[in-house]
Length: 182
Image 1 (cartoon, helix red, strand yellow):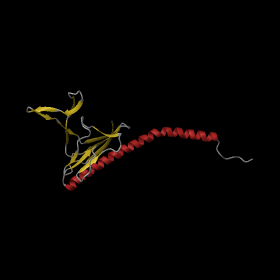
Image 2 (image 1 turned 90 degrees about the horizontal axis):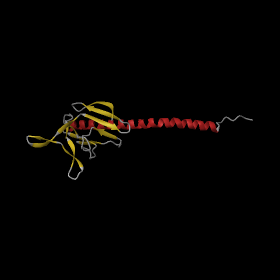
Image 3 (image 1 turned 60 degrees about the horizontal axis):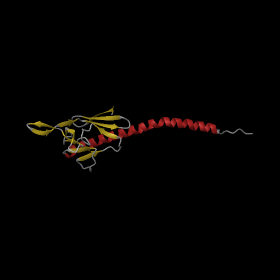
Image 4 (image 1 turned 180 degrees about the vertical axis):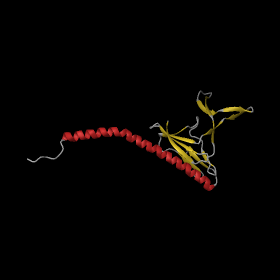
């Protein structure tokens, strides 16, 4: 009789079971890697759009605008960025707004100060809540309160609970990117 050099059915089943256990342990970390790559890709895309808008402002010697979470048609002076993933959002959007104020670059490439009307939530006569401008009296006249928006943009991955904090310098150039949590 000749000796058979194959595997037994039990050996194959044990090997497959061990491989399945290893695959189940690796699956969650693989998902985290994919989500981290998505966050990195969105962050790099936003930095690229802002850099292009800044360069275009200097090239055309005119203001250029970047709309965050916007979906308008791009023109030589109007850019937009929106996340391609629903779990990746912009943090720090002022209350009462769907998106942060537009970013405007001057003809010198300087990021102009962004400001927005401060909002407050009130209950109207119908009992419904709505957002209205927060006003103060100035010389007996009601005027909207204005707040400045910082030169920091935070992109948050809801799945990872991690964020990327992008900082721009006073002159509008990309300065740094740090990791944070959301």
